Image 1 (tube, helix red, strand yellow):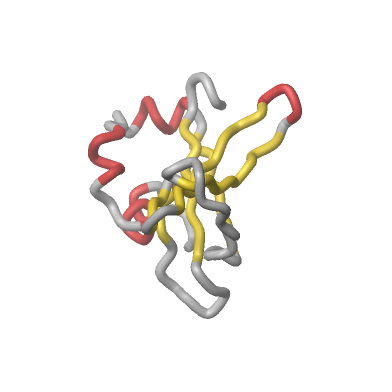
Image 2 (cartoon, rainbow, N blue to C red):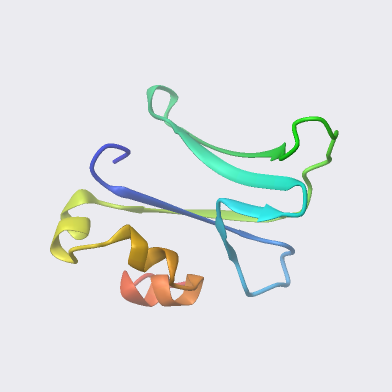
Length: 100
């Protein structure tokens, strides 16, 4: 998947919020991102300080979601990453016919 498919990641600030943000996400001095560890079959959600100096507690998000889009779907929909960057969470879910 990491080589030919697509992985989308989202987070919610609280469990009551219904407006997820797309990861990676930057807020003030905090940079939230995700990485894929294929050898260990893991998705890691992380946060770092942008300035590299400040100690931060990265507790902004309570809920994370990742969506794996197979290579066959990527090819059939002729997906352009630039177009996905302009979509909201709900638009992406509609585009891929996924229940939010």
